[in-house]
Length: 213
Picture 1 (cartoon, one colour):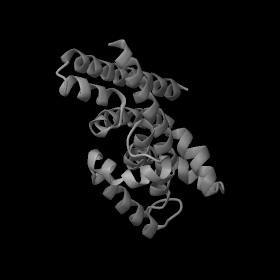
Picture 2 (picture 1 turned 180 degrees about the vertical axis):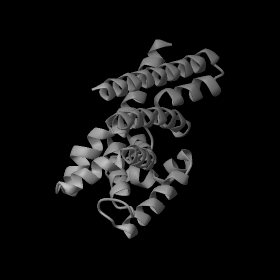
Picture 3 (picture 1 turned 90 degrees about the vertical axis):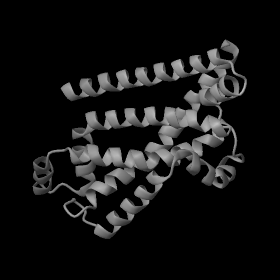
């Protein structure tokens, strides 16, 4: 069983790690833009804000399995394949990016408006407020948001196994469902649960540590 579980676990970690990086790369700037371009933001661009909101809402409306199928051509273009762990990183990143944007938006909106107004009154520029006020002040919430993103991606990666994505989900389906090897399915699920619990505990501790500082 170990010969099956260890490679599948490594595939899941590989997919989640890189899709987290890419989804944050896309979603983090979008989340910042959503906050600063709104009507009461520090860089008012209502039209841009509305366009971003529509795009993000549309992307979040797609079930992951359907989105993965729709993104097959893009996966083929970028990595040369539509099947496998590397190819799955593309739809995983695209599916998680809108979620990241909303999480970042929510975290940044929790920052006390008085701090922002004080920064503006002292002549701070928009980039200075974003990187020296908003992000540092919202850091505990941002860490919790990243934690939720990673947990969501673990779930997405398991679903990706249904259509050749690899990882623990693929192992559970191929052996647990099609070959009726229940022990492999149960073990795969237990490993996924342990991963989620471990990441949640680590994220909580890190957020509390930074909040105290």
